[in-house]
Length: 288
Ligand SMILES: Cc1cc2nc3c(=O)[nH]c(=O)nc-3n(C[C@H](O)[C@H](O)[C@H](O)COP(=O)(O)OP(=O)(O)OC[C@H]3O[C@@H](n4cnc5c(N)ncnc54)[C@H](O)[C@@H]3O)c2cc1C
Image (cartoon, rainbow, N blue to C red):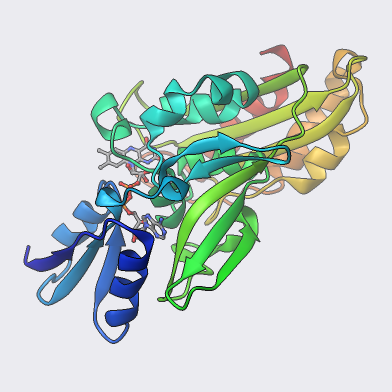
């Protein structure tokens, strides 16, 4: 591998580096766990790497909260999410997704921004963030900022709405916390660790104090080119009492989740197997 590396420490240095290299072949990297594999498979002669890992700006790194939002810097690693008490308490779906990603060594460097921008249908943290209706905060090298819902930021397999001038600064999750939640991340693979999901299901349900579901966010991974937010399944649950959901309603919910699946068969699993597993884990989230 043969490339030049630029390691900005501040946001102005970062944006200047992106601006100055617009006409050149450059890539942005954070933990490099995905990029390194891509570089093994492609010509890197003349490539410029803009390395985010040395940035000291808190907006890129910090997990924080205000009255409306919970904010996660794009450079936050999976391990940092796992170690954050508030994430564990309020968003078990995200805690579990980060905890089920790869191995300790990878989790220590794999970032949230990198997981999103790698745009894999089996991205664990991405699936959880889609279920939580997260928003990406994007900046560009001309100083502009914009926000986009994560589910629309991802435009297709390996495609996002980012232009060559842009990058993600942080991600926010709406802070409509409820103490009464059912939230988790089911990941099915062929082994316990270092396994990319064959199927995954990210779910986050919030209930009022009587058990009525006031928010339902459900996303499924590795069953379509992108990770869908299963709107019709979520609408079906909203307004129902979590304690009174009948077996036929559980089946209807699972059918609606399944309607978003259009999996492929590959060496890891057939399309039939992926659909069966998705249907079965969807039905059982109420018992977890
Ligand atoms: C052995 C191994 C096992 C793995 N297992 C899993 C797994 O179980 N689950 C899973 O989900 N993933 C897994 N991965 C994939 C990878 O670790 C994750 O996707 C990780 O979160 C990527 O983060 P990163 O910081 O390393 O990204 P990088 O490799 O640095 O970058 C990935 C992509 O994101 C872009 N990017 C990074 N940050 C930004 C930003 N702020 N703004 C715009 N673009 C940006 C880069 O340009 C690049 O295109 C595995 C990888 C390896 C090598």
